Image (cartoon, rainbow, N blue to C red; front, side, top):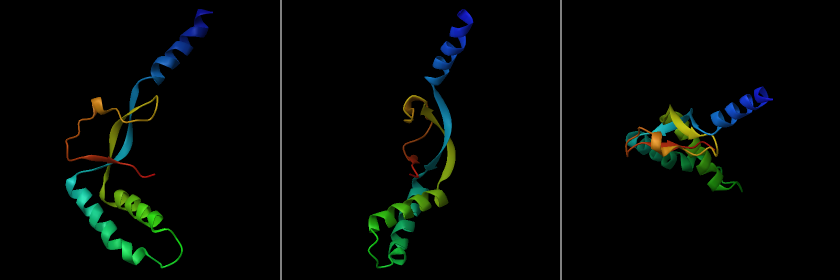
Length: 100
């Protein structure tokens, strides 16, 4: 019976901490390039159809993040998927970007 609880307890303990996952991180220069990319690409991306421009802008931002920002390991809470800010070694100029 005690052998049944040992794997269960170890599974619970391991799932409650935080782990490193890869996320896009931009510094100040990369964020400026990203903003310029979105600004310069809005007009050529507008096809004058009924498509919502909010969707186009969001997709341009996502593609800009993938182009200009670098992937780095980031500490993520396993419980809720939020960023564990107590373990992040980033400075004030770095920003963790989402692509969804």
